[in-house]
Every structure is written in structure tokens, then in C-alpha cells.
Image (tube, rainbow, N blue to C red; front, side, top):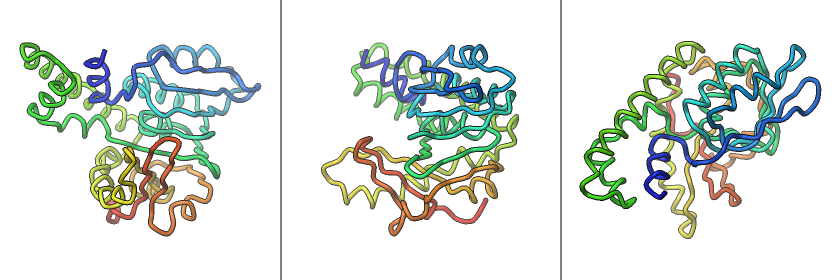
Length: 249
């Protein structure tokens, strides 16, 4: 099981869990709760009616391929999205940008991590080391490393196609390393915490740099001020702003 978990994390899944919970809130809205997984797109399609206009989300992980499928359906149905608490990982990378209008009210967080493109940049040596530390037997390392590399490459290609379909600039999926690098100095302020680093891009940057328009956000600037980050103890998460990034590439 540990081996499967590490393979999932390397592939960007973040957790090996059952499908998210999707339910109708009212005649115009559907709620999505939990990690995104295969089958969620079919459930959303079944729940959606001509009067459905809004998807409310609270999701901190999920399978990239499943999230891309969900994002395509969100775009097809011309749904708006509203974050109740958090939209992180695959939710932030693939579902959030696919929506027509996007709302991040006060108290909610948009949190990006490494994309499929960035995960695919890991060297075979890095993959072997991580798999070995996870307990994969020495005789299985070469096979599992090759399988993981192929999986990451395939997912990265799917991500590139997804971005092209939605008109998202490729830089959106490539900027995280600069954010993570700056986060290292901030992490020193929490020596006793295993904080996971996330990136919360501003609405203006999403629109002007990456072609992701229609974002309405609450008091993001004040929540990240004065140091440009937000620490969320409940999630052990260090959410960084845009201060490490230059002007639009």
C-alpha cells in the first residue's frame, strides 16, 4: 500500500481515495466534496440539468486525468465555480480554470501545486530514490521507475492538450518552482511543522498572464499581507502569493 501511495503522489494524485461526493444543493447548484476521482464526471453529468449554473467545491486533491475530464464537462456546461473552503491540487489546476465565472470568497483558498508537466521533469534517479525509500524491492525498481516515468509523461501530454483546449497559457503549469523556491526561507519560521507548499495566484495574474479570466476573489491581498503568504495550521499548508514571480512571461 505504501508503494501505491507514493506512486500516486508522484503522479499528482495526492491521495488514493474513492470518488468525490457530488450532490444537488438546489435547482441551480451542485456541490463537490472531497478528492476528485474517476467516475465523478459521469455523476456530474447525471446531476446537471438545464438550470444548473454553479458548482460549489471543497476539494484538496484528486486524480489529474479525472480532474481534466471534469474540467472539460464544466466548460461544456458553462458552469460557474465557487470555492466553499479550498480548491487545491487537481481541483485548482484543472477544474477551477475551466469554469466560466470563478468565485473565491473571503475565508476560501485557491491552492496550486506541481503540475503534471513539472512532475514529469523528475529524473529517473529521483524516481528510483523515492520508490526505494517507499519500500519498493530492488529487483522491481527498474520496472516501476519505467512505469512511473511513462505515466508521468502521458499525464503531462494530456495536460498540454487540456491547456490548449481551454486557451490556458503553458506558463500556468510551469511557474510553481519559483514559488516553492521562495517558500523555503518562509518554512524556517515553522521549524516544527511539515508544511506543504501551495501557490495562490492573484486574479489579475491569472487573467493577464495565463488567460484565466472571470475570477472574483475576496480579501486575498490582506490575508497574504504583509509577508505574502498564508499559513493554514489545520491543513499544515503554507500558501504563497506571487511575490517570487516576475511580470507575465
